[in-house]
Amino acid sequence: METPYLFFLGDVQDDLAAKTSRGIAAWRPERCLGEYRLPGCGTTLGLDELGFGEAVARGAKTLVVGVANPGGVISENWVASLVEAVEAGLDVASGLHQRLNDIPELRTAALRHGRGLYDVRHPAGPLKVGTGEKREGKRLLTVGTDCSVGKMYTTLALEQEMSRRGFSVDFRATGQTGIFIAGDGISVDAVVADFISGAVEELSPVNDPDHWDLIEGQGSLFHPSFAGVSLGLLHGAQPDAVVMCHEPGRPFMRGIPKRSLPDLRECLEANLAAARLTNPAVRAVGVSLNTGKLDEGAAEKVMRETEKLLGLPCVDPVRTGVGPIVDRLEGL
Image (cartoon, rainbow, N blue to C red):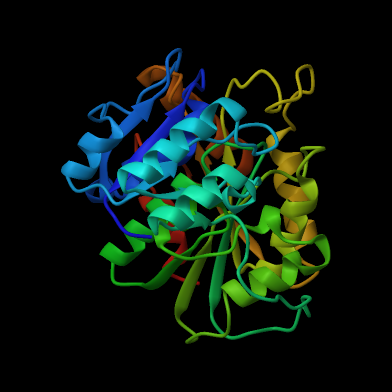
């Protein structure tokens, strides 16, 4: 996919629905040129709002469908705009479950104008089943109490800090946003269930003994919709270390009103128990909280309470950085 990107935000109504484009803009701002919104869109990235022709004139190469919605579908009222983008000279890329290439009028327009359609959520080649065999190298996996609690942000923040300290380290993307950021990866929620652990083994293969693969977590063992993906990640990652991610004060699991989030200790213990199937020596090295909805005093209080509860360093990647967790990794 060629850069820079123009982000398509469609008509989504909240910031969380635009998390794909928001994540790319936060971690790869040099690739981001502007945004395109339909009437009624309820969120913005704060980038220049550009029409397709104007964006192409300013150098944009790819329109990224930068939203995530239930089911990962492309709304019918988006299609005309995507076709218009192709006709203006843009490639189109999407991380949704529904494939761009399965939309007849969009595929026809891309062929007519010689533009590319990129469905990054769908693995390109055959995958193997997992074996659970021990492999050289070190691995860290972020896990969570729910979806969208900061697993990707935490993993990227760890990569940034570890690189700064001279670690040999790579971020391994397992979701569509991470793939746009890293430039490669495997979106595990689009992998057939039998191959999830094998896909993660392929994503983080044998490496030098002191090399760290930081594997982006997905979902939660306690989320009825996505626990299967979370479990496959735990087994395939074979993690030496896990970091628990959580948003304090979230009233219910994402997409399931009235189902409360799990107790932090219970959640951490369940993840460690599952991870021991492929790495009996796995250990927890920290907790990462998303305290964006709390003021400074409340955020500090909940971080200190969490440290006391679990006996682990507790950080907010945005407010405090992840240094205390990396300190723990220095000796592993």
